[in-house]
Amino acid sequence: MAELKTKLNDGSVGDFISSIEDPVRRADCLKITDLMQKLTGEPPRMWGDSMVGFGTYHYKYASGREGDWFLVGFSPRKQNLTLYLMSGFKQTESLLMKLGRYKTGKSCLYIKKLDDIDLDVLKEMILASIKSLKRYYP
Image (cartoon, rainbow, N blue to C red; front, side):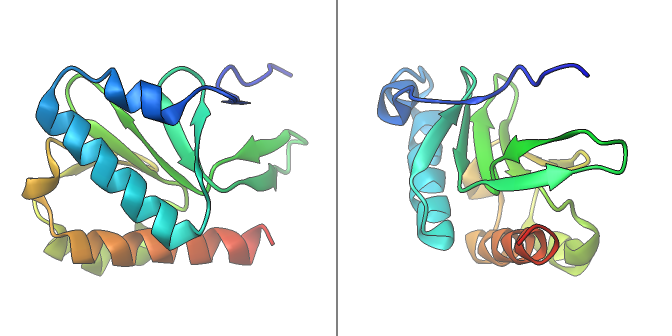
């Protein structure tokens, strides 16, 4: 089986965020770091070169593939600030309608800037994702 390329490492989250050139994106990442740290009770950790994750869980698929991943995280991509809510969005569809401007992928929430969304709704979504993961991966 192929090994995951994105792994937990000892990189400095502070240095990573400080290196973000766009001042709005950098400020948004600082806010998201604070928010996710408070909601998970876990410190931010670097995963690969450009992802910041909080907490971990161990997964194992029916195929036998298994590994460790973060509960929630983010990455300041060029086009969007990508938030990773690993449980997906099925259980939070009603919250998505109140969130603001965004796009989604399977477990990715793409936003341009935090001012485009309702942070209280985002908090609820993050907590729902964490709760779901902890239920399935205790």
